[in-house]
Image (cartoon, rainbow over all chains, first blue to last red; front, side):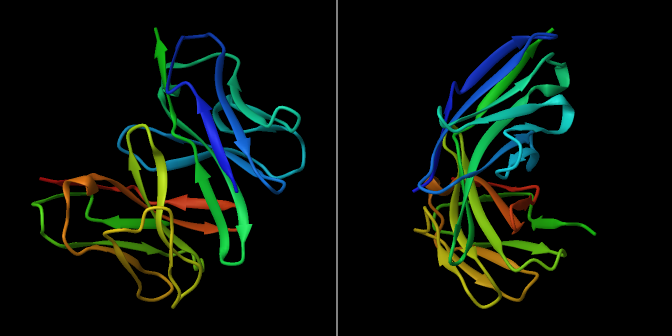
Length: 115
Length: 110
């Protein structure tokens, strides 16, 4: 079975500070892992994905995430927060089944950026 | 190329009323999914369709029905709406590991 846990439903950072959003996964097979961003009143947009190539994955808008198998983690980071980063962030894991890919989402982390 | 479109964007229903949420994709994908998003619960899969003519239950199917009308369209029906179905509904269409989301339908059941 696959699942993800996002630690911290709300995170606040100052503009220019490091952003760290935590995600731990559980998977019975090698996982595919994703981070999505949702801006207010919009759908989900893919930030980055891990597909078993490089463990450090770079995404859009300066975000990156590192896959750590020993820690079953896939934390999202950005060196310097910008006001436009304020949004909801979802970690997800995918597993392939005989009816296609199933995606399992975390409960989300709301990021607030303080000027 | 519009990607995934959903109608309506907003809807208010009274308890017991029925309605159908429409979703269409123009990417020629085989799979389509319906999720609901609730505060503090992330996205939960309601139903999915791996290909035209097939549908399967997801995590939270109770109170919903779906129809995969053709390869492009996948509708979600609430036969007798309940306040617990107040939510934001997202249609998505994956292709391999890439998942494309619609803009969502915000449904309120009074």
